[in-house]
Image (cartoon, rainbow, N blue to C red; front, side, top):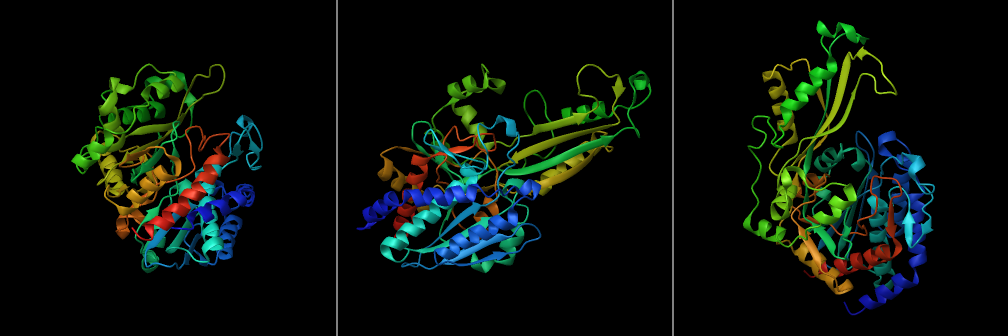
Length: 451
């Protein structure tokens, strides 16, 4: 504790090195969806952990390897860091203001694919470990590093890894891969993630596209799929699949109380998106409650027939839709998939084929977790700013497998910001936020060691 200022001074004096470490990792493409650079990046991460004295190795899965490392510390406390080394594709390239793999610094920001999601946080935490070791010669607690290479495609083999290596993963808390501040500098701390049941729906009505003049007697794949999709959810936004809501866990009194403290940023979001109101006219506390505690059914993509310029009078033989369902505790994605199949059959859509992609279970940690209190109080001390605690993120990740299933509480903390353009062109983080997260990570390790 007494020499934490010395750790901060070391970070300030070596920030150019820590920025260069991040740039080096961002400049290595690692696109899991396209199989680009995965092996090379896993080796880089393994090397970065080895340089800091971790007992580290790559653990094979049926897909991309998981890098796992451990370094013992002064106390018996154990803290895990979950990160991922894979990133989204950089497309569309023509919308980037520069090379997405250059990691250039411009206007006080580092720009590049994956810099916010999640290489910035990954390297910031390694930098905090480096600074602690250089100043103190040891870590304040045992640190476990879990870095996967398939988060951007649904963490499809993380469950396989946790089952095979359960004995290595015990911990007293887990800092998640994501996190950041809002536009007023308040750290947003999330304690969970929604699950997902992502499906592809397809129908083949005839063997080939035909002239639309025959529409009076031949089945149209686009209409079949449209009617099937319309059966899933109504204009009232209620999902019509029987049993879909049966296992939805109701929020606790404490969770609802936390929601009351979440700022309402509706006005800014609606202005940014060019809308005058939300669905169903939702406002205030009810909008926030639905955001965090209700599942969704979203058409993510549609493909059928002719969609080029001008007209083409054709009746499509095939139609396809991508549909994602964000799930809340205690919904199970495999059960939801079965309910959707049963629903389609009972409504006469036995000809609609469905296939699942990357199902993940929802997870949520306790509001009373000691780690949450540590992340909260250290950020306030470091910055003088407030924090915003939310019971869950609106997004999805393998939270359940690395936290709930192992009896570990987790929370987020990171270097993100509202205009980081995660998954979009011109992804970025501020240099100032990156350096701050290095210091915050050092504070978290120091404080959690005695929490």
